Image (tube, rainbow, N blue to C red; front, side, top):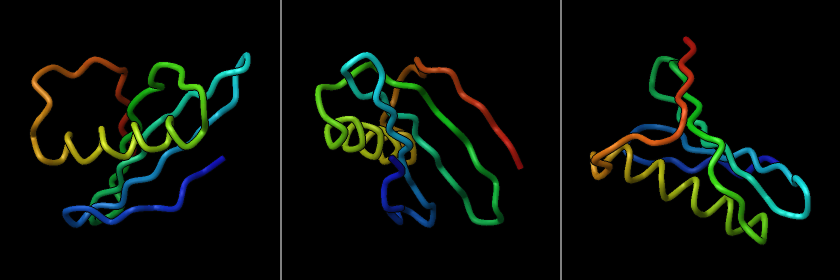
Amino acid sequence: MDSTPVEYRGCELSAIVRHLSGEFVATLLIERPGGVRRAIGPFRSFPTALAAEHFAIEYGKAELDGRLAVRGPRVAVSG
């Protein structure tokens, strides 16, 4: 399932949520102006798709705000 994109600080945030072994896992997509995209995740498992999506979007907002001290998940960049 792909989430509806959210505009935040000039970027577009969206989550790709997959159902794996009875739980939901999300990967965050951040698209900056000019088309540069980053994927962050996958994040830990959640009991619902909505919880996974919400966590990914909030993580993206924290990332763009500079509120994350340490980057834990793997990061992929394309552009």
